[in-house]
Image (cartoon, rainbow, N blue to C red; front, side):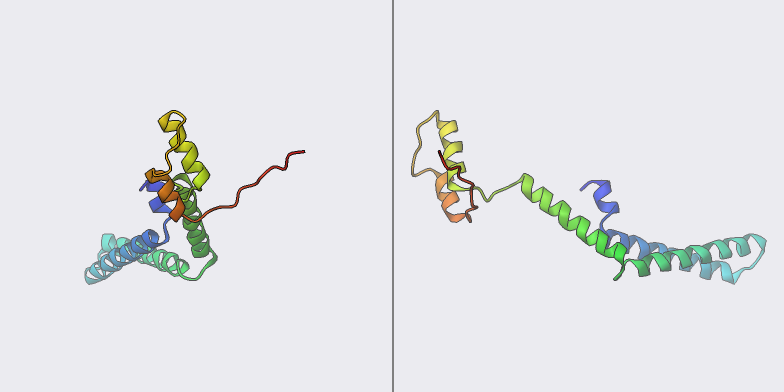
Length: 129
């Protein structure tokens, strides 16, 4: 899986948001124990990060952005399945087997038997004049 696919994956973003939320919460809790000048600055920054992660995480459930990510993933899966189209018709199997065998078509080939079990798609047929 490519990094672009992971970044725009809804479940991956939910996991990252939860992890970032937990880390920032831990930093906020630890810096609250010792409030010197440096810890106070880090405490404020981690509190803001925690607030941002909470808003991001809440936006990943039931928002238009989460619907966009779901639709994007569905489209990507559909495109990937089109690349590996296993539902070919019997005519496609006959064409493929005739090209592989040099023109003679065997009726008992595995390609034609697999094509018989696959659902058939409608093909456009031109009417001759």
